[in-house]
Image: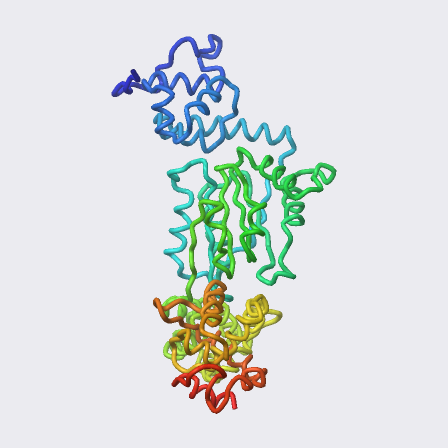
Length: 468
């Protein structure tokens, strides 16, 4: 029968068989752990329950057959009321081991945004990745997904810097641009793994020539480490799978314009859909860029500007930068300039353009979904249904339904309810602009205000006048 821990026992009273007679201290980490465990009256099974590691793992640490990780040491400190005793020893042991093995501690995080605002709920969700998982053997994975320009990368980098500042991921941080979502432009996992292995100090001559072997080598180098891996702008789950570490001390944050179907069955991932900013946050972001004096000069104009930018962070920053670069005293003139939808699509500063962000997602669509997307820009009203989409695109309802699902997966439309979708105002304007540029393709499917093969609807009749 397992003995319950003795109440009120002191963790400083250690059994003599673990004491070095010269120093008066336990001779190894494992011996110190066994001494504390025995003094507290914990069996291996009881301690395993408290630290969320299996008894066999603890036994190997106590007998010196396995090195303690910093995460394991922290759990022991908490379970045994040992302050930071075990954490300090494990950290020193790991530092010495890394020095002997030539371990490189990468710090690849980009600079955090100076004008980052809001997203408090999403930051708390990401914090939850680090808080005692019920399944401690699983690598926590957070997937930030949303439409182009919504600020996915900014959120991932902001949270990563906060986590590092709080003492997490002492072994380093890796940041990789996966260059999605266009299939032809997306980074190949084979090449990404070569860069990652170089980053953690693997000599070029020891990098395998096979994808699976590279993935295994990467997992081996991260085993027992506490590292953060940020995979930015992922195209699909297949691109991510070979890059995932196997050590539970690591964590992964992925950003993608896709919901990454197929990833959830593979890993214990948490999905974080990212919407546009709320009105107060959008106004605050504009004020952060242009300066509060300018923002306070005409708060009404700032509010109008925020709405005309669809409260999309990329559009907001581009508009605010235009105020600064043109040295306007307030947001009023820019808000007036952006009244036409075409002007909003033309927002650009330097080599960053809003239209380019949309175009990247559009080019990743299959031909049928791209055709339906263009048609949606011509539908009146804010709600989209399968009948209206089929009518404007001139396709059967079942094809329209599949295309709408594809567009929702790419965050180019949003599901409103069981029967309807919604489209962000700027994406709708972009789709309408594409439709006007190729109005022959859409115009040919309209016959007397009716899409070929479909019954007339109020949506198709209204759209006909726009296509003619």
